[in-house]
Length: 197
Image (cartoon, rainbow, N blue to C red; front, side, top):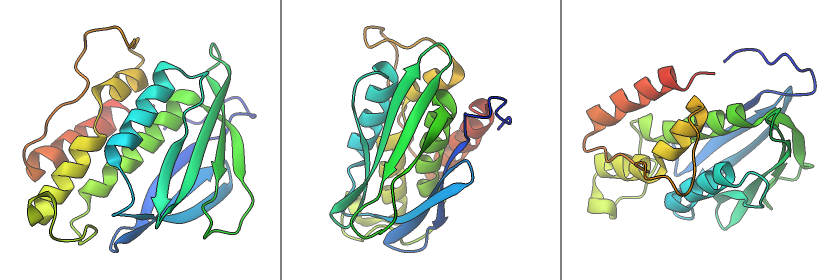
C-alpha cells in the first residue's frame, strides 16, 4: 500500500500471525503501535462481522462496532469519522478481557483501514490448517474454509474500497458464492491486486 502523506494519519494493518491453532493469533498495527490477541473459531459469527463492516461503510458516522472474539470476550474495533471529505477516521481497539493492555487508537485513512481489515480477515481461509473444529459445515476442512470465505466476502465492501459509490438503496450484488478452494484462492489473489491502495 502507498505511504500515507498526512503525518497525523497512521497506517492500519490487520494480519493473522499464527494460523495453526483453533485460537488463531492476530496482530493489529496502527502506525508503530501494535495489539495482539487470538480469534476463536467457535465464538465468532463471520456473517455478523461482514455485516458490521458493511454497516460501517454505509453509515460511517453511526456507531457499529466490529467484534472479534477470543473465547467469549471480544476485541472491539471502533471507528469514528471526523471528516468524510478527508476520509479520516479515529480507530480505537478495545482489548478483550484476556489482554491486559491500554486501548490502542489512532487516526487512519478510512478506506485503507477497511481494506486491511477485510483482506486480513479473508486471509484466514487461505491457510490449509486445522483451524476449525471437525463436525460442522459438512465436516471437511475444505467446507470450513469455503464457508468462512463466503460468509466474509462482500461485493459491497470491495466496491467501497475501489472507490465505487455505494448506497443501501442500490441494486448491486452483495456477495459472490465461491464453490471450490481453487476458485477461492484465485478470487483472493485477484482481490489483493484489485484492492491495493
